Amino acid sequence: MHFELKDQNILVYQKEQLFSEFFAAYDLYYPEFQSYNIIFFPAKTQALTSDFSDALFQRTKMHQAQKKSFVLVSSHLTHDDLSEEIVLVPTLQEAIDLIEMDEMQRDLGF
Image (cartoon, rainbow, N blue to C red; front, top):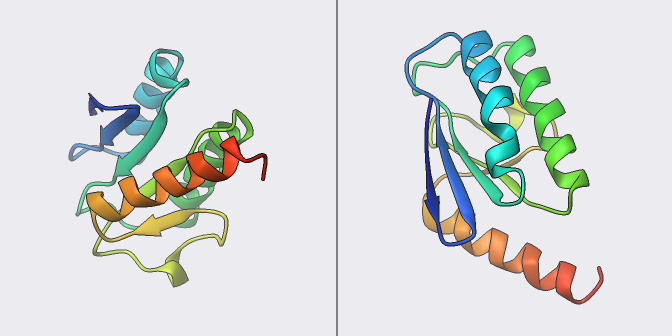
């Protein structure tokens, strides 16, 4: 796992590793970036199993409960592959734009 800070967002990259190893590392480092919006880039080789999708969904809901955005960036996954609650966009710029809109809505109390 690799992560970097970009403005008020944490970009989280899954390296070529088992998803269970990735989520173990994610959970370990989460306290360091829980106050930021998360933009997650899964490995291109990551198969979308129900276990991976469930683990991703749990972390998405937990982070959104903290009034922060969690956006998945992937051009190889589709909305049909994921739960409706998981936000998926194909590019980093779209993720940033979406987070800006989320922040505006939160500021307005929506």
